[in-house]
Length: 139
Image (cartoon, rainbow, N blue to C red):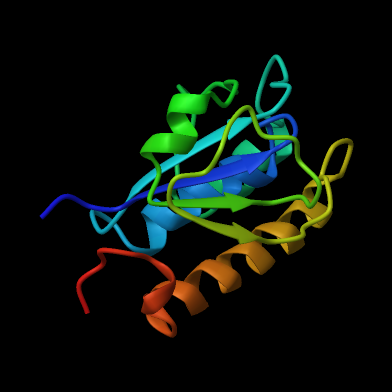
């Protein structure tokens, strides 16, 4: 059985969506195909986000922000928006889940750690406490 694809979206793909995708892989390795993208990608991932993930042993040195495409939305089993009101480049074929997390742009490391832990808690709850949120996932 193919692992369900979960696509995390935010505005710049430099913070929230990167945290979401990398934390999903960390919490549930091999159970999902975790991806991230942004509506208007930044030039680089926030250094504070990279450091906060690195503190958990998650190395994102090769990761780069990228733009979401209509194909991404069609291919994903679950699309998680990390910010309300995003204008998507096409319809979502799978389940659309809306989360609301503040933009960590220009935050210090202490603030990003709090955000990382909040996103971690949300993903942990969904992957271990409410697995029905992810179509195709084996229980």
